[in-house]
Image 1 (tube, rainbow, N blue to C red):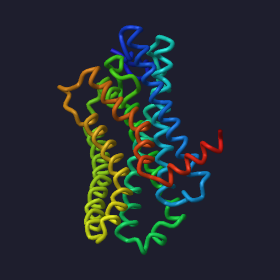
Image 2: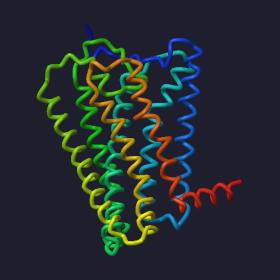
Image 3: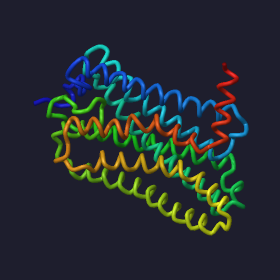
Image 4: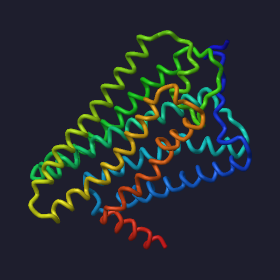
Length: 307
């Protein structure tokens, strides 16, 4: 038996048993991380440099790309490092930092997706008040609130996780320090504190989820009242990328967090972590740039100017 005070490091799950499979996983993770870095970096640079993209929608998209970059850089580099050096260890401090930054970027991303939903709601349902409700000061305050709420929520989770006594060893069944895997090592019977964390998380994320659903109900009702087919198509095209990103985020994260223990296995946990922690940062820039002609034009100009 051991407790958290005697644990100096954790053992992460290796990506594969054989060197050939480990090399395959290594190239997969490297390709995905480079795609996330390139896609989000292009969006950040295009929005920052092109004054035509200095709009509330693109401002929030820039912040979303920052969260995608942060979450990808939190988990993938350590996995690549461990594969290259044939090790599975991570220090106790490094694990705590990984939990903090991962929860921070993921919760800030969900808050930003909720704000972006409000942006689409105002643009379609209250277009005459768009400039008033979403001026530069209001956008800055909402973005700051998203980052601050993510930081506070992450501090709460990290403090709770690493204040629990750990008596089930130090081996984690995941390639990064995932909070549920650390809680499996706990021997604490503080059900009241765990229940309090669960209730706070439930109401926070359910509040955002209900707001998103309610906003999209109002958006679809407003779009269907547009008389011209071209107008309806244009309105839908501005919402579909956001809706696709929200659906990807909620579906993968919910299944990873709410799946029953009977379904848990190292291979399934690894696949689910790949789906909700590694793939979305690489897919989000692609989803947003596919139907955003202004963003594509700005990125094309920037690439042409560079080369």
